[in-house]
Image (cartoon, rainbow, N blue to C red; front, side, top):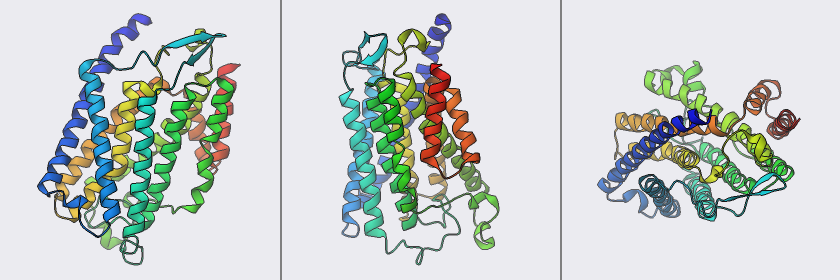
Length: 362
C-alpha cells in the first residue's frame, strides 16, 4: 500500500503543477484585459471604494498565485520547520500554527467580504430588483445583470468561507474534543442565513424562465448553470460540511489509527492551497468577468470560455482535496440530510459531526 501511494504521489503532483500553470495563464489573461482597459475598472468616482478594494483583492489573489507557483517550482511544498509533529499521549498535534498561510487566508477572506458588501452598498440602488429585471439568478447570460440581492447573498458565503478557513487552520492544533467544538462553532453563521437573500439559478435550466428570456439563453450557458449547481452541491456537502466533520474528528485521532500520512497540515498542503485559491477566484471572477463584458472590455464568447476554463481549473484540486481528506460517512450523511431535513444547516452539521465521531471512534 505504501508503494502504491508513493507511485501515485508524483502523478498527483504533476496534476497540481499543471493546474497551477493553468491558473497562472488565467490570471495573465485577466491582467492583459485589465491593462488593455487602462485600469479603468479600478478608477473613477462612481463606486470608488469598491473599485479600489477590488483592485487590492485582485492583487492579493495574484500574490497567492505567485506563492503557489514559487512553491511548485522550488519543490518546497510545505514549511517543515513550522509543521513538525510531536507525539504527545499518542495524539497527533501540531506544534504551532502555520502563520504565513493563516494570515494570507484571513486577509483574503476579509478582502473578499468587504469588496462584496461595498459593491452592494455603492451600486445597490442601480442594481436593485426594481431596476434590474432578471428572469433568474446568474451572471453567465449576456442579458443578465448582477442584482443587489445576489451581491448580499454572495457576501454571506464570503463570510462563511472566512469562518471555514479559520476553522481549518485552528483545528490542526486541537485534540478531538476541541476539534468537534470548533466544528460545531463554525456552522453557527448559518443561523444568520435568513437575514440574507436567497437566489436560485436553477430556473436557468429547469424550464421556469420567462419564455422571452429563455430564448436568449444559449445551450452552453444552460449547461454551465447545471455544472455550477453540481459544483455547489460538491462544495456544500463535500468540501464544507463533510470536510469540517472529517477534520474535527481526524486531527485528534491516535497516529497509529489514522492509516494515512498526517505529517503535514491540510492548510499547508499544496492540494488544499490550490483548491482554496481557485475557490475564491471562482467566487468573485464570475461577476468580474460579466462586468468586463458589460463595459465592453470582453466579448461574451471570450467570457464564457474564461468561465469554462476557471470551472475546470477549480474542479481538479477540489476533487483531490475531497479524496485526500473527506471521509465517506459525513459526505453521505450530509447529502442525506439535505433531503430529509432541509434548511436546518446547524442541526444537520451537528448530526454529521456526531455520526462521524461515532463511526470513527467506536
